Length: 370
Ligand SMILES: Cc1cc2nc3c(=O)[nH]c(=O)nc-3n(C[C@H](O)[C@H](O)[C@H](O)COP(=O)(O)OP(=O)(O)OC[C@H]3O[C@@H](n4cnc5c(N)ncnc54)[C@H](O)[C@@H]3O)c2cc1C
Image 1 (tube, rainbow, N blue to C red):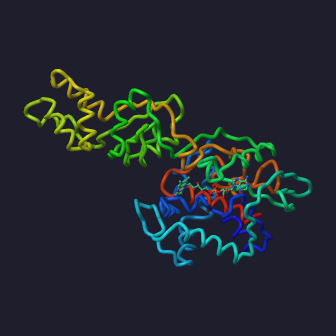
Image 2: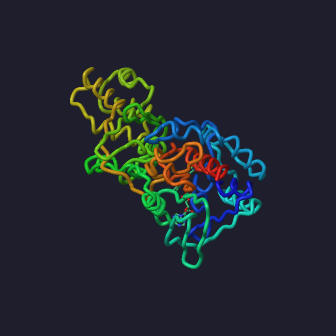
Image 3: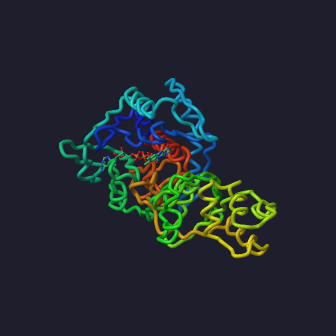
């Protein structure tokens, strides 16, 4: 996106990519259909040490701008969950669109090109194995650490440090959580069971599906909250959001295990309802015991042991400190001509197309000024 915008302004642009094709993450995104934007994308959908930083770029290049590009290329798309736009056919449509835009803007793409060194004299000197680039501006768009087997590297962070920029600590985001041994032994065999929940950490809350896995929890609600989770912290899960559990149980005339299980099956998947009630067995189902179960169902406090790590994370939270960048242009405040865009920056989107919208918007902001 940055290369296209700069190329359209007559700049000579080289995209240097170490993989054998560009945009590999686009190709695997959104289950192969690329959730390329979110029509409700707002600055509130991003996590950053400076929550105001993303505003300027997001306002300069909006979801409507990207949708106009998609429509110009006659790419069929649909809205899946509210606001989330996906390709009807395949993510390859988005890749072809970007490649066509690059070609039209005269952008040169150098594939299988590994950078060995970057220096700054009166200009940037970028040395790869068999070619040296000289340029007045350098844009770092190397993404985060997620999915190392697809070519993710720490190169962007190393380069930022080399030029004196600060890095906010990185961690896997939008990632499944791993439960502790006890919880795993109690729920691990429910892998594949999914239920709607409301999860929260402090005032950050998401209502969506939660999925049990062999090692812990996943599903959109858990992926969303994982970006706010830090090692040692707990998460709060409401297993029956908006449901009056006590009243449902209270309706059962005979209060025995079977009746309570049956009541829970009204708002939890069958197997999980049974397990949940069995793990909270009371000798006497009196009002006090029911009130306690009601509370636990709405306020399940879980202490995850960890996450599934960068191998399974959709994004990397943290990154190049926004204090060191201009929010209008993404240029370094310390080094003129050095830009950082996309996921390498400490701006992390929620699930649902926000990370791509940030990549497009920050890229366009830089491409229009460099
Ligand atoms: C499985 C998965 C699914 C996802 N689905 C979605 C989705 O549907 N919607 C959404 O909004 N977001 C999604 N994301 C997140 C989204 O893909 C990223 O946030 C986005 O691609 C970031 O764009 P970027 O250009 O900053 O970095 P990237 O897309 O990661 O691109 C960085 C590029 O730099 C190259 N590179 C890295 N190091 C070097 C180096 N040293 N030398 C040369 N080249 C290098 C890489 O090969 C890569 O091509 C998904 C992520 C994953 C992992």
